Image 1 (cartoon, rainbow, N blue to C red):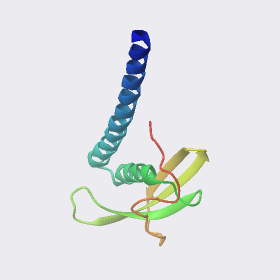
Image 2 (cartoon, rainbow, N blue to C red):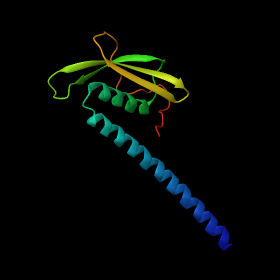
Image 3 (cartoon, one colour):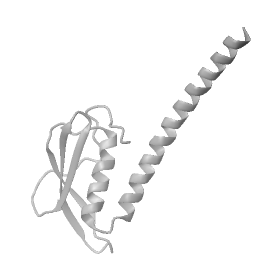
Image 4 (cartoon, rainbow, N blue to C red):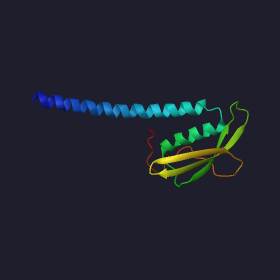
Length: 121
């Protein structure tokens, strides 16, 4: 009887640790993405960082998905436009490309909510 109780206790403990680890890992990934966004002095790097972080809210409705992201430059004196393209390579694998542009495209959404969010390892 005692052996069964030890096994059950161990199982429940491991399940609790697993759930806690997943929540902590997701918080870490979000903070790491935010640090990359803040650290990027080049507007292209910042645009890619923001676009990748937004993939965690869901995925675009089409692939490739192209939109315009407006960002302030590093000293905050002007606004620059970046064309951001999300392309799905395979199920759950995306590439994000950004470049300065003057094209007139739709603005990038603040989040994608069309499907379940991606988990970025």
